[in-house]
Amino acid sequence: MGQSNTIEQIQFDRGWSPAELDREMNRRKVVLAYLIENELNTYTQVAATLQAFMNDEETILTLIANDELERSLEDLRDMESVQIDIDPEKEEMVPRPDPTEEMLDETNEVLSTHDRLLADYRGNTTEDVASALAADARSDDADTGVDFSSLSFASDGGEPAGDEE
Image 1 (cartoon, rainbow, N blue to C red):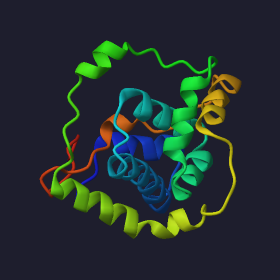
Image 2 (image 1 turned 180 degrees about the vertical axis):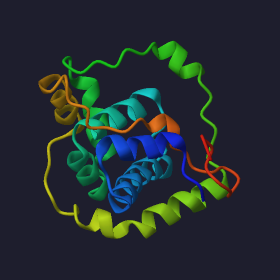
Image 3 (image 1 turned 120 degrees about the vertical axis):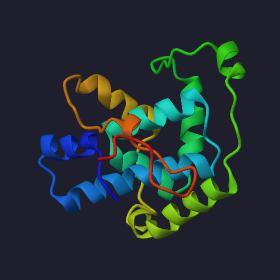
Image 4 (image 1 turned 60 degrees about the horizontal axis):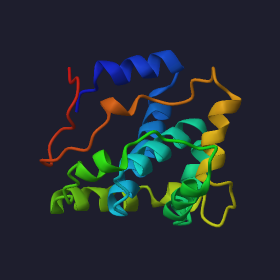
């Protein structure tokens, strides 16, 4: 499978070896697969998770490994300091199609293939999503994340969509 120019540029910019790139891509696949598997698909859930992951990967992976991410996301509703600007009426109008069987099979494969990664975080204690989001305010100029817009699961069992060479 060819790599996209975007992924190659990210690898170059971050100075990652091919092994480091694979590690980082796999961590992101686990996050996306977990969101799909657990039907965490509202704008607020996805945006908060991805932003928190960019700020503090360890917190999000620990919450996922301990199956506490959804509870932690629910706690955001009670916090005035964390605001994700979304119109609830517009959010309600956005279609949320159920994942296909192929997509669910792929998410299960990703999660089982990378269970060892999650095993490293199981039993660890961590802050919640709100704390990881607050880390963004503490480090405004930190660029710790990868642009998720170029990453996707293949919906037809083939190659992921994107800037393929």
